[in-house]
Image 1 (spheres, rainbow, N blue to C red):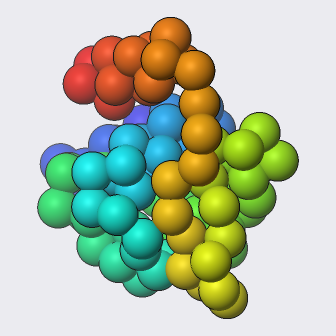
Image 2 (spheres, rainbow, N blue to C red):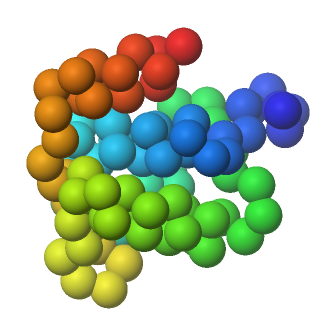
Length: 92
């Protein structure tokens, strides 16, 4: 799905893009992550801050993202194979 010339991310694609963005820029707030996604040409459906928070909660449970403070997230740990899969999917 697209909004104008932006690709709307949801589900796995959104989670992977967020994990990759955090890995590249370091600890980031939800608004900073939304700005980063917009810079990459992506959009988020629904209420963006809630959608991103929900996606990050999913990734927190898997240990790929850590919550540092309210609305502040940093990268967690993941196997190299998962990291490579995320990088490949985000590039597509």
